[in-house]
Image 1 (tube, helix red, strand yellow):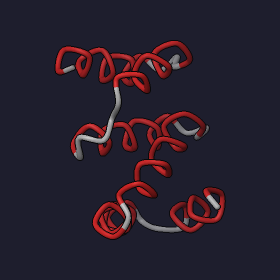
Image 2 (cartoon, one colour):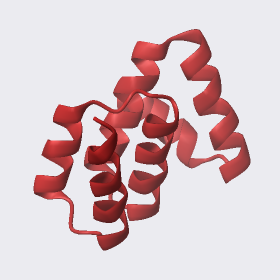
Image 3 (tube, one colour):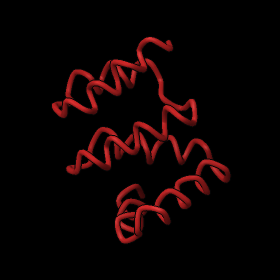
Length: 90
């Protein structure tokens, strides 16, 4: 399921990608959370992971346990900084 959604998202320009994600958030917030979380943990492209995490933060969907797990596995310094800044808000 996630692979199909992500494959569809990968074919979109960034602005359309954002609109599509926002549509998921409005129509099915749990699906949006699961898709964004999957991208944040698994996507090969760090910009995809960063954007997914930023949207999770902006939508108040990022969970403390997700941040802890992401910090254990993430190696991109920009993403680590983003995640560390969010720990202050928990």
